Amino acid sequence: MRCHRPRTLRAALFLLLLAPALPVTPAHAAAAGPPLRVVTYNICGNMCAAAPYDDEARLDSVVAQAAASGWNADQLFLQEVCEPQYDEILARLAPEGFQGHYGPTLSGLPKVCGGHPYGNAVLVRGTVTATADLDLTVGGESEPIRVPCVRNVLHGLANWACSVHLYWDDGTRAAPEARRLAAQAGAWREQGLPVLLAGDFNHSPRTPSTDPFYSGGYVEADAAEHPTFGAKKIDYVFFGYPDLTSRAAEVLPLDPAVSDHRMLRAVGGRD
Image (cartoon, rainbow, N blue to C red; front, side):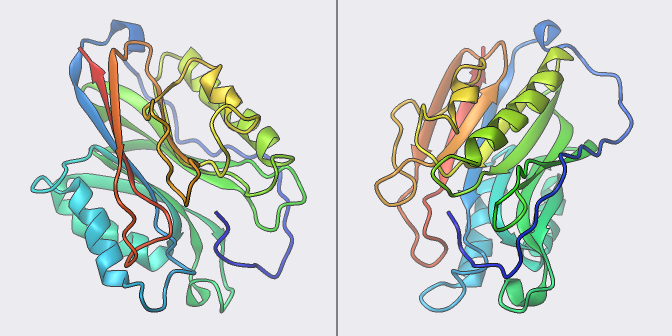
C-alpha cells in the first residue's frame, strides 16, 4: 500500500537493464530439487518509523527468515524499503551466502527515508549473475513503479526473481503495469528460465491487476488467499516453474513493531 505522499509526479519509459546473458539450464531439463523457500514482506520501512514501530525489530525479523538458524529462506522479496535498511539486511545476510539488488523509486526527499533512496529489494541465496530494473510506470502515478529483478541459480536451476510493488489505485494504472510485468516475465520463461514474482500487488486475487499471472501459467502459493493487509489479500508469491508439483503458504500474524502488512512465506515443491 502507499506509505508516503511524494511531492513530484514522475512518469518514465519502460526500461530493461540486463547484464550480458549467460548459459542456462532449460527449465524442462532440470532435475527435481529441494523445495523452494520464499518470503515476501512489505516492511513499511519509511512511514512505519515512529513508535510503536522499531527499526531494529524490523531488520531482525527479515534476517531471521533467511538465516540457516531461522526459517532458512532461499529468496527474500521486500517492498517499501529505505536503502540503509537494505544495506544493513544484506550485510547481515552476506555470511549466509546472500546477494541482492536494490531498486530505488524515490530519493532526495527529506520526508521519505530521511532523504535516502526508497524502493524495493530482492535478496537471494547464491550468486547473482544478472540484474534487471523494470520501470512499469504508465503515466499518472504519484511515483515511478519500478521492479528490481535478479537472475541466479536456485537449487541447480537458473531463474529470475522480481520484487513487485504495483500502484495502489483502482486498477486503472496497476492493470497495465501488471501486463508489462507479465510480458517481460513471459519472455524470460520462453527462454527456458523459471520466474518468481513476489510482493505487494496492491489488488485482490483475480482482478485485472493480478489476472495476467493467474492466467499466465503461474501458481500462486497461497491457495487459501489469506489476508495480508487488514482484511484484504494483496501480497503474493507467484511461482513460474513448469515443473512445480506442490505449494504451501502461510501468513504470519501482524507484527505491530515492524509493518502494517503481514509476512507471507511460501514453499514450492519440485518432486
